[in-house]
Amino acid sequence: MSLSMYQASIPVFTRQLNNLSTILGIAAAHAEEKKIEQSVFLNARLAPDMFPLSRQVQIACDGAKAGAALLAEVEAPSHADETSFAELQARIAKTLSFLQGLSAAQIDGSEARTVTLKRRDKETHFQGQAFLLDHVLPNFYFHLTTAYAILRHNGVSIGKRDFLGTR
Image (cartoon, rainbow, N blue to C red; front, side):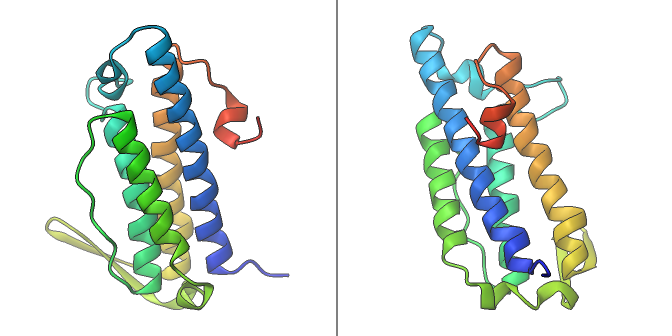
């Protein structure tokens, strides 16, 4: 049986964003228990030239919704930047709601469709399948993993099973 573009995207984004939501919940509880200001975690980064946790979560959400929107040929919603765990949780929930509103019929068949990614002064053209597999998913996992690593590095008690959602 073959894997459809929908199956390779929406369920993957949904599962991982739910896992990210769980991880952020653990981090918020850790901050409260240890009397650490949320901003310490939200502004934490692994290296000075990397984005902080809050931006990693935002980019993961934006990548999932923008990637799915381009494949479905619909407009992705935009969200304001957040400054708390609760606001990041709301962003994840809004992203999940958008993704759940996309049907398989909108995304399946996009594997051969030309997708144009516009960045600042440059346009990059992909075939739909390459766009999803070689750009969207790796970028999505990069930001999820970085968010996880920032929290783990800062002492939040999370592990691989939390990242995978198997706890």
